[in-house]
Length: 71
Image: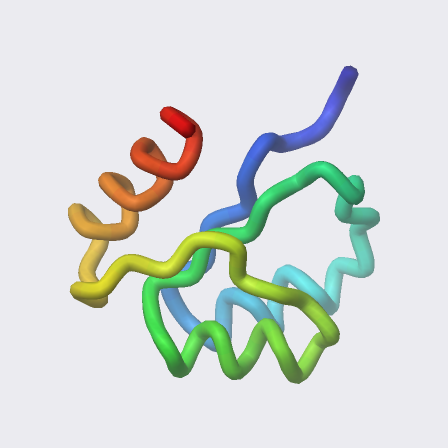
């Protein structure tokens, strides 16, 4: 099956620019957000962040994604 397992966003503007592309997001694709500002941008577009680290930096985001998929 084609598509991404996870879409990762590190800023609200990245969310806005990605959504402007109007690409389909398969239902099984998980969405990772670096923090609350990015999560708010996702919500504005009707999307839910499945993964958000407690510390809002790239290393923590990567760890949160890895931990999520270990489940």
